[in-house]
Image 1 (cartoon, rainbow, N blue to C red):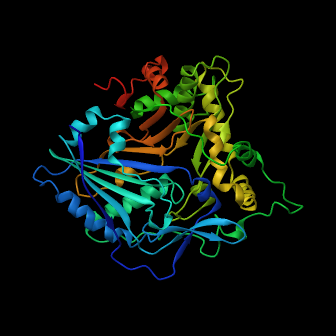
Image 2: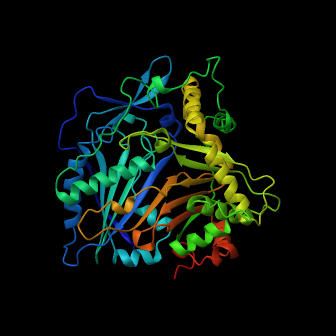
Image 3: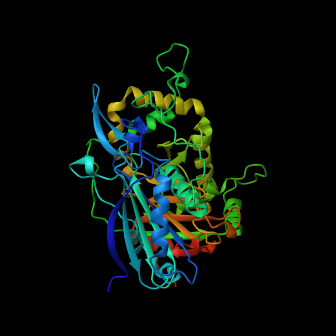
Length: 460
């Protein structure tokens, strides 16, 4: 008998009507993520006296309040044509799809044996309909466990939001639910005067000016990623996700190992150290013996550009880290290569890339289709999903993120860990072809840190 049973599907709308005629434009960088989706699962314990179905009812009511502050979430996509076709969100309050489900046992029981296949049962998703006007771009699944606990599954098209925006919505929902009223937050920002602009045009440099010498590293990376076909390739490879918890002492040990030899001043960040470790180990399990595989790191650029915390849209950028010439046994070389690329991604380079992308907006919808031949490592350590508290005294016990579909070579997500594990603690979620994931779990370097297996093989 299935562990999860699905009860019903409904549409949830906001409690306040949207201003007629309101539209939310999508940037060229939004359109670059058209073929991907974000899926998040937050696990919670519930009070022992709570009746089954109570949590679902309460969450269903509070999400309607929260949605009043996010009109683009309840809207629908439509195509506009001004020289070329582009997406825009018509904020018509058509609603968010919600699925209600029941799980056997308790949330603790579920987490003891969860794997990728089981976890993805907790996040509802529907591929885009031919009639896009009826297609919901955001989905919520509420799964209550018969013996206590609830899982909140959240999924959305990457076209509208990246993991930072998706987390923003969940936290706003939690705030609304916790206090019974919507918490004032910075309203989601968009450039309503432009169809595609990522940031105000007045701050964007002109690549054609004589005095400006554009930074081309980032532009060249995206140019090299352009696919031969505009259609994403599909493969029948079976992927497995493993999730490993590194406590603060484990991460400190990793950072120490990733330091350059004889250096007392350079200390890699937790992300740089962990990215170096997993880049090296994954290259080894894939059979590389001379150098490391090509890896693309994905970073949030909001802080660097000084964007408001309420900025709503995609602003995570990829940059390749070349593995040729790096030792497959020296972690510090890999970590320093990651650090070097991160230091190159300055404000001017990003602004130049934005200008180039807007000048070549016709490429945006296929821009990410050619990154499949690289391992993707995403830095999500600055997220604060554990602050999404829906009920006093019951913070999330675990939060998982998935970016689908997975790149052919696999992906690594570096996430925050529960606060009680220490300030430097991290959760690393790795998705690889199944045979490679098995070998990674047996890698001696990773085992030397003794990480706690949250999801994967031989959990128990």
